[in-house]
Length: 195
Image (cartoon, rainbow, N blue to C red; front, side, top):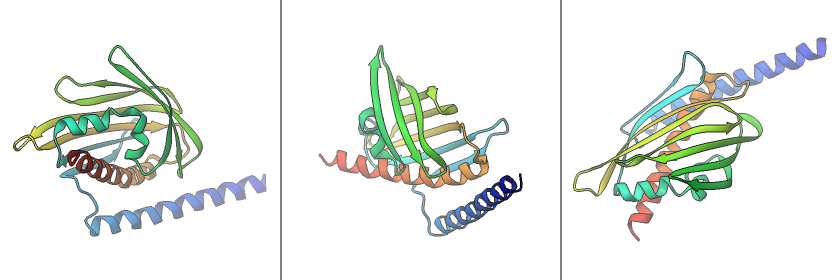
């Protein structure tokens, strides 16, 4: 019994230390001007999970952004977190994507199966259909701006994985990962627009 308490105490101390390190990293990123978004808000949901909303400007047409978001086989290239596509099945306008995700916060490989539907006015809605998550809902709404050479994207993500990691830690990490994700999408959009 004493060994279990000692192990639990060390696990708790490790989580607290990890949270402090993440907080310092987030503050450092904020001071250095990390995000390329007009707005990014990440908050813990009262019923559990984390919600992120953002408005992002991309220097490419909506068609370019749409093609990146719907290139399901290459989704892992849009993220810094290690993941792989196991299967993509597109039927009747719905893309079912089976992903495996390796994340430092969650030991082992996590399964995420989603169904994505293209929005009529541009964008994508993705919802959980199976895997190691309690909730997963993501929406991209795209709008051409300027002379059609830029895109404003309204983004929303609600995620709640099956994990012992506190939601407040997931929120800290999610903010950093979304800032990186938006930068990667921006870079890929620039590359694709130049072709």
